[in-house]
Length: 224
View 1 (spheres, rainbow, N blue to C red):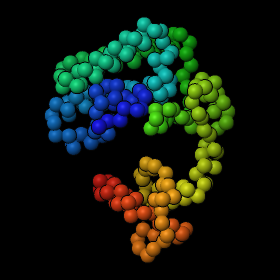
View 2 (spheres, rainbow, N blue to C red):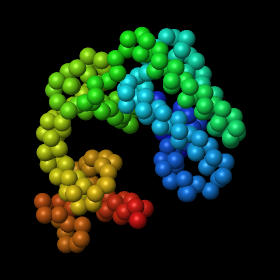
View 3 (cartoon, rainbow, N blue to C red):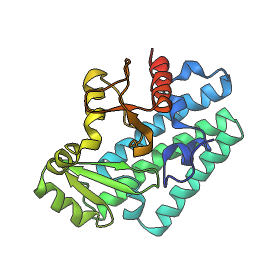
């Protein structure tokens, strides 16, 4: 089941609730209709990503008139219904409308004098839907905060301080040893135990729990 707590996630809004990750592995999908729908969806996903990078995650709708915003939301609803009904041609038409909708949103935002995000800032989204940002330096962080007061912004120097904390020691080692490794969660104290002999041991006095090792091994198998 797709997550529903993430505000504005494109795979919820446009794909009728299917997981966005499914688009990354098209040959794992055996349903030809879903495959055709996802093929169409990929274009509008890329278009939304481009808009988000320029204006901020889901910020563009806030920069236009109420009338334009309502039309945009109705188009999203049209996409959702077409996807859920498994109607490829209706979805093709709806996706085309979404592409034009993003063009219209950007044009209106520009004509209204809205400012794109600072070039040195990247945004991300947490599980609860809240947005955070990473800025190259303090000056960029300050300029960005004037545009997005509701977003917490961090500088690269601050991230360096956070990553120096002992809790991230093992994650840093794994990233260096296994390029492409992703941090999915922070290990809690109950997830680690005393060192024992074996391939999973570390030299800092702790080792991953059996449960955590099993999860890592299963993910490693999928990566092959």
